[in-house]
Image (cartoon, rainbow, N blue to C red; front, side, top):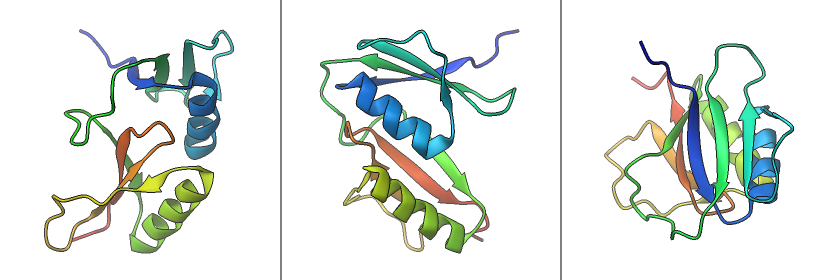
Amino acid sequence: MLTMGSVVLGVADVPRAVAFWTAALGYVSRGDGDERWAVLLPPHAGGVQLALGASASPVQEHPRVHLDLYAGGAAEQAAEVERLVALGARRVDWDSYPPDPDFVVLADPDGNRFCVIDTAHG
């Protein structure tokens, strides 16, 4: 049976992406990366790795695949959104929010969209 090993993001600037995602998630670099490729490891065993590869492809406005980052409630979600923005993420003017959303759409410094989810939202 297969298991999920890594989620791979295409980025324009691998070192910048490493700096952002290690600060955002508390992950650590595997240590064998370079200007074109890096693998970040979760702080605890059993988590999914995040691989960052240099890519010239344009960012998708409505990506088919994205990361969902979980927060334990509305206050934690708001605090995490502000922390991520301070690290270099930006808020995305998302045109597909439902009424009373449980998520906030952000973009990393390379423009990759991801969501911060309020898991306590009813």
